[in-house]
Image (cartoon, rainbow, N blue to C red):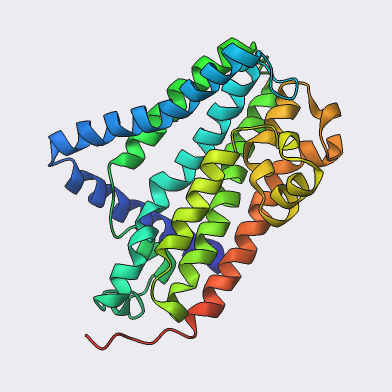
Length: 273
């Protein structure tokens, strides 16, 4: 019971810090508008590319544009669910070099939660808005029937997909305690999930599909759960049981990534500022 109360207080404090950081960024209204517009065009260019490809070839591994639009929207929602609260982790290299991370270690709050709530960048709002708009359009195009169990599964899918992507980002972030600069690795991870997570895995061949399922869990972010929601689970490279359990894998990977974070944190050495 004490653990539950302590966890609740930590999350409440983190939420308060996030809101404060968000309100601080709202002072720059032009920046807010530009970031939202930029995110819309950046993320929208991906679905536009799919439309161009499918207008020529009509299907991709049996997936029509309607199906791929839904897959793309689910992937983007999961990405937005991760990046909105946690994008400030991308600045942890700078925090270490400037000695700002030291203060996180002496405050009565988990250092990871402090790093998450230290800044807010408005492009995350653009990702959330774009992801929501594309999901509404994708779901209407694909004629997805949302029964209460499907809605619950979708919510868990977005959270699980966010945690699956976040797990790999957190691993890359954790390496900064040893190597001080991991931005290129985080950039690679972000682009791998972005560019490859919106396509049916089978187009990459059996070996690559296996890697993107069990080594780098791109398939569990959107492809596998979207297949289940669209009634395509029978054509997957995993069993339908695993497809309906897909959200759980994100939680497992993130727990493992958090343990890796704590292990790497032991090797942290202050920059001396």
